[in-house]
Amino acid sequence: MNILFTSSGRRSYLIEYFKEELKSIGEVHAANSSPDAPALRVADKAVVTPLIYDTNYISFLLEYCQQHAIKAIIPLFDIDLPILANHKQDFEVIGTQVIVSDERVIDICNDKWKTYQFLVKNKFNTPATFLSVADAVEAIAQKKINYPLIIKPRWGMGSIAVQEADNEEELAILYTKVKREIFRSYLSFESEQDNDNCILIQEKLKGQEYGLDIINDLKGKYQATIVKKKIAMRSGETDSAETVHSPAMLELGERMSKALQHIANLDTDVFLVDNVPYVLEMNARFGGGYPFSHLAGVNLPGAIIAWLNDKQINENDFKPEIGVKGLKDLTITRA
Picture (cartoon, rainbow, N blue to C red):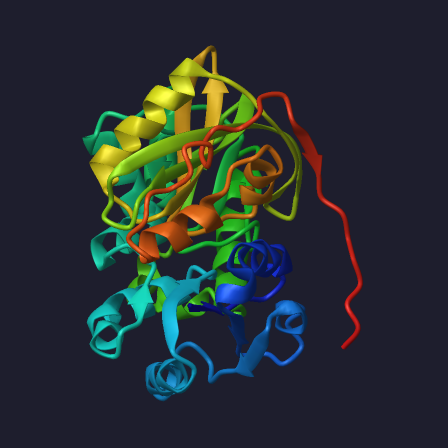
């Protein structure tokens, strides 16, 4: 069994996790549009692909999968998700399963305005969110929310172009700055869907932040929620976290699974404000917080391989040890 990771970037740890599970029964292949992606160095085989939005991207991957008997593709980058979700059937024809949620789910998660609408509709607590400066200022005037406000890309990733405004003057200036930064980055690709409404203004939450791995099987059936208390952040990604037991978070995770019906992992950011959980964002893929779950004994790679082989998963795959604290480190890979 061979598995291909697309947009593998710096997720070398995921390559290692899957290599450990596959061992002598298959290979882990890593793909990236840049030849300098560190993950390419640790995979069994590596390939440099066209850019995601290149017209030859899908045909390139289809040919590669056929040549190397790829059983499954796992994308690791938000921009990659809608492209591959749209072509799942093309890969099924050649016997390759794309482990990505359907287009509806990806659209809800990638478009943060649709995330907000989904959360409100399904009665999840979430920060007040606006598409215009005028609407945010009116909410301030009506004392529905208070400064500071967060200004961020509607189709955003990590902490790119995220700003914080303490008053109306800053709000206007930083709104313009965020828009300029969006169209100077790769965020411009998805933001071009709606140039005039590509920025969100959001109430800033004050509370303890948690990261959830909400895990479904490959048919969208709920399996488990892994709860991690975030201790430190760096560039929008969890730098240190500890596994904890929280009945409220576990209940939220199961409700989210059934409402969204995603595939495999849903990386979810939640704030606990006055003992009430507020959902901030969801990412329909392996997130930067998954290693903390894995460190505590969770084995989603092993479960995915079992599901692909129509086998039962290990009953301990989703039973984390509570109280495991993890710290991310930097390593250097020779080019």
